[in-house]
Image (tube, rainbow, N blue to C red; front, side, top):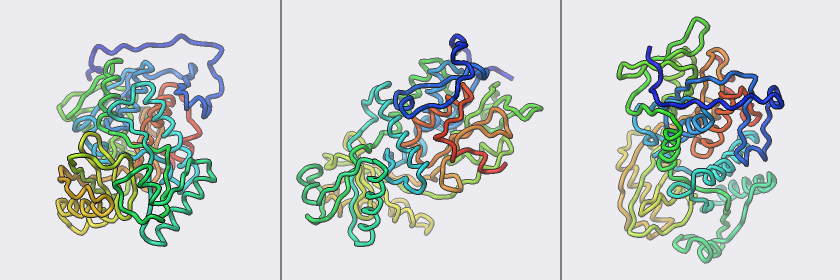
Length: 410
């Protein structure tokens, strides 16, 4: 079996007897500052294969490489061109209230994005312009106002406006009644996922990581102790590794199966359409009645709707789904009526069976870790940081306590 590609430098920081064996708990302040806790009492693995280079895999690989690990990033296609490129790419915690621990993890994800923008630079990928939500029926309005009240009680930043105030202060191109209540989540953002992945991969490679794109993993070898030994690629090559990180998104269940691990996943497809405008008439993410809209950089706008997703399994043609999305967007933002549909994709969301992330080590397979989450855009940077800390230092962060892989028995 061949070793990882040459040219990777592994940097081992000096042993510090004053910190070895210290409690491995990362505070919220440390997390916001980008702190990285390494336990010297746990031997650091030398070779890590990250399978899947979307936003989650790229974040894991970047964090590992910048802290001295020898990393190879493996993707069956091209980095950032899969689900990440066809995500609504909305960074938020306002839509994550089903469980308090999940909300807290997403708040940490938002903070990690802000920290990341300070480290690698925000240009071309980070757009912290907030998020608007309103409805056109009493039931839908009551539901989002109830959620806003809960979020306010959880110290999440919530601002309320009328439709008239939104048009005069924030988005003059919108169509809504003057007295319509509109909630504004000012701390939320959107990201250009493909650009962010490109930035992270570029910096990881500069730090010594290798990239094997257009090359699927077809097998994972384990030793007599059940631990990871190597990965086999579709081109016939084999890479000796100590650690595998399964960040394969919708393909995560298949990768888990290569180590005889059962990772149950939902089948929940979504359709996203991009349209081109002569001039983009909106400035931020918005949930208008029946349609989600956001800028996408340049002259592009992204459209998504859960209502249109429900038509996927009826056999409706993707082109027709795109036209329905375009029509709904036109109702909310009349200036979008003159735009042109540029592309549409139907993708399967990477959602574990219970709807929550699966992140961390799988004890039954030493050296195998999972990083699988539907909210990968929001959670990628914080999952990358916490999982790298766990891999390199053995630290199991409390933020991930409810999202450990062992809740799905192998």
